[in-house]
Image (cartoon, rainbow, N blue to C red):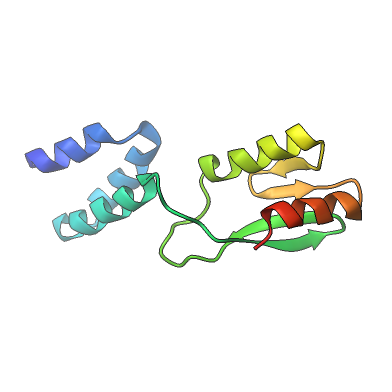
Length: 115
């Protein structure tokens, strides 16, 4: 490994090491692409546009609209979950899914977090 590759591996978290290790097997020509992908994944100021899809009665699932992003991250969903807990409006049932007791709660949620 060349020094800049070692720097990348040392600067990222353990969970991203799996992505980097998998890309390592694709050859040296892919390192630039992998570094670009990881840099975008770790950017703090990415503004996501989230749409909510009804997946079941009183249940919605988040879907990212931006094509330049790589999907939702935990730090994107955490403020939504905190708002739900603070306002007693819905419950997070999986990483990107929220369930509500009734249509009123769902409407309140969509007014706050809908696009």
